[in-house]
Image (cartoon, helix red, strand yellow):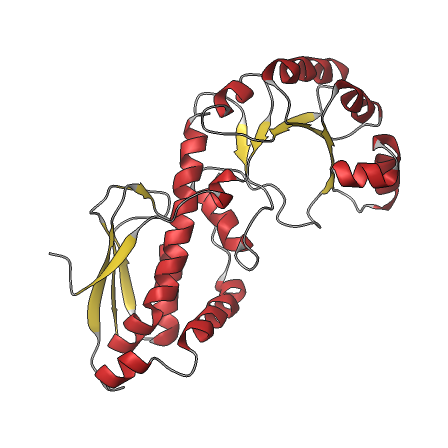
Length: 288
């Protein structure tokens, strides 16, 4: 799957908001050092740790919003593994644009690159298996659209972007509706075409109920591998068209064992919720 950055008509208002938050009434330091007429200068970014880069076009856009005449030259593309010490990009813009935009641009790229790096490690565990790794809605408010992009850059498949993308009946929905059967019946009567219904299950009885009421996707939540393997066999025998997702406490140490049970998808929030930022620094001038 190719990672696609959302269009600028979607992203520009977000970038402008984040720049306004950081700049406030003005950059006191930069305005004292450089007049508005200062000529363009160059800077470059260096990766200070091994990782997978994501979001470099966002950085270029940040500087362009502050200086429409700015330009950039990427040395890495999103998704490329970059060893520590790699020059990932160069920028030319007014000193004010480079210095005022530095923190917003770096924060975004370091955050997204951290997610892409962690995601790639999970995806690598499944490289020779048909199981696909998917992300979740456990994202930072305001950053979901970009964190989901970074997940794609790392090789994952996006799960639903929001509540309107698909029907997912989780434990609280099921409890409030009085059971899986009631929940599926009520949702199916109200949902628009062509949404699917996914049901979270935790035991064999819930799996049987989800099968009986024709769930499109059955999630096996926090099940041990042996129970998960039995569930996959049961679901495939009952209806091979039902897709199966595993979720719950997935780690790098367990993901391959889970995949070997035969599930179609494995979902985890870990690359978004637990990944460190990839350390990147801006240096003045051209790289040597």
